[in-house]
Length: 88
Image (cartoon, rainbow, N blue to C red; front, top):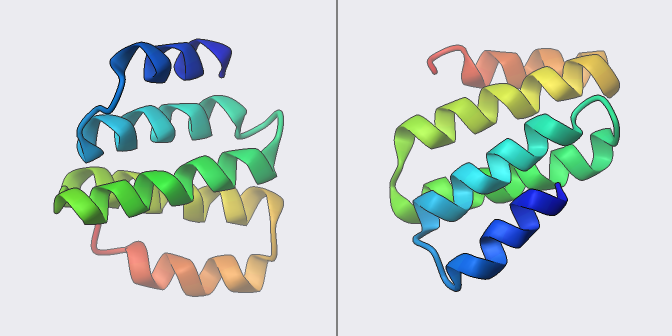
């Protein structure tokens, strides 16, 4: 996570897609260590993907966020989320 933060700092203001991919990567890194921090990163990745119109990144981040929710959150809520991301 520190490396991702350092990269973001060096990039200045990257494009929404670049920022989204970095947030996605941070979410994956944090997933098993700090699920709530991971969820925040993944939500920011989704927001950046939507801003950029990057459907691929949006799909990847949504599937990762839903999977994280299934492993560390409410299984009923995760099941509802899976229905929404199956198309990805």
